[in-house]
Image: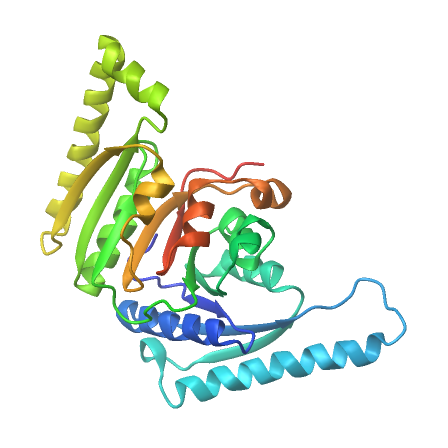
Length: 292
């Protein structure tokens, strides 16, 4: 991820309070990184016209225009990142439109409504779809989350994604002037944990992996000496560890890999579990090559 996000930030709005909170978070991110901010309001267009299609289409377009107007009003005369604000209205579903825009920007920001127990079991939300299929980083701002600078950033890392994810987390902590907590979780179940403790070869590999991760953190700390960093290694569920004791003014950074749209929406991944349950903004940094 570019530290300056020179290709800009895109935020999706639909007129809801959650999307306007995402707008505020995105505007602050644009200020911090001196990046251009683009506000996108979309309106769905049925593939096959049906009776009443014209009225429904006009109503959807009106709602998109109202969402765009609400975004302009929310920011007033503010120029995020020191640049003129761009507001555009595009046809299509929010997930598709924002996924396309992700190809030409560094970060896409969306809001997330409060979910009850049933909703948490459903798949296909805009935030989940983007986190699974976007080509770039995605920030999800849930209802009730703080929209200013976080007081602490928590980043979850695995051994195969820390260069991208750690780099993004350290850069964000430096830009936001806050502490960073690096969390790595091993032994996601009791059986695995027991095997690690009984098998000398597995235990030795585990220790070497932890040492390598500590070296990675140390190298990033040398690059960003102003960031107060803590390394935490736990056993258990990665999602549970990342969600523990979170407050609305945290920021969580996790790695993710792209998946085909259908598979990605069905996949119960750690990033998906975190972004669905976290009370604070979650930044998903895609690593490696897309999975097709």
